[in-house]
Image 1 (spheres, rainbow, N blue to C red):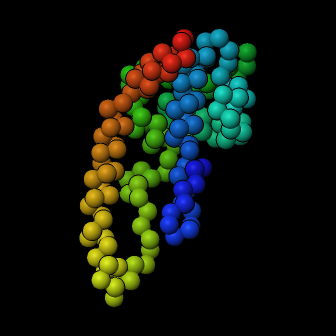
Image 2: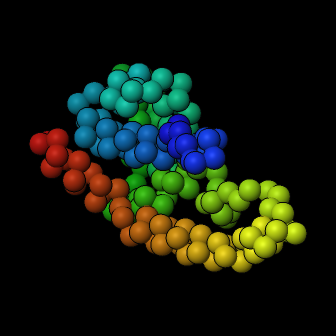
Length: 156
């Protein structure tokens, strides 16, 4: 989790599941042919506990993005063409906001306050537009796009 402190002093947390899931899929593609992509081997690259990796692997498997096999030839394998998996697919597989707003709103703005009574009118449509733009960009970016850049930077 990434902690972001605002001026009010409290912390809000943004999940790292999505970036871990993308990292997993890149590793599976780049290294999976040489050695089994297991939660233990993936955790070394990602720097997260194997239990966290297993949980995310399970989410990716349930979404149909990977298969997971046991044994000598086991490990994770990407289940679709890289061009058929978008960042939005990965995000939806591991984050639990599907059909909801990406942005949480504080629960009790004061209706007697001139700001509190209109804060939803001021922000709701803007936040919806921001979320829509993010989702559109994620739909247009494929795992193939990301892996192509990762290969170039890793010289593989």
